[in-house]
Length: 249
Image (tube, rainbow, N blue to C red; front, top):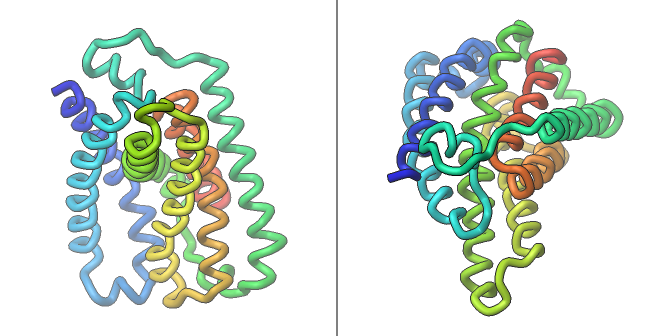
């Protein structure tokens, strides 16, 4: 029951984030080819409902699997269930913020000096979005994507490896790094549909750009989830979204 309550709490956070991100989604997707196939309000509503169901079920499963792996959201758990004594530590919050900032800076440098010269479509396909709308995406990405990719998928990979190889040797560092890298690749792959909607096509270079840009940040988030807790991965993810979607547009 303690996992159900915590999954419900994260689902509520996801709902708040998704509602806040609606202006950004409407601005970005309103002019894409996919928008013509389904009325935008209907499409956004259906997407939110689907994502909330996924967040609850996969979040619940992630907490169950992570229980014996040291993968958890200990601060949220204390808030919701009153168990444990975890709380935000200033140095860890700063580490999450700096990691998110540096990781995002690397992505921006790659975008400017590597991918934009190879993909002039990036500039021509950009959609003007108000900065305030971009900033409001920080909770949707920071919470929902971390629940699915880190809490569920990364935990699932580590759990499978532990079940296969850890019964006698216990938990090993390589199991966590395998989960981090696999989840980072999935994080990149999960952004391909959005790239398809925006550009209308996926070229090899666009594929590499989507995987690399998002995958690099995914490694940062995965490491924080492993070492500090899901909350710090969310903070790092959120600062990246604020910079990329809000400040830079």
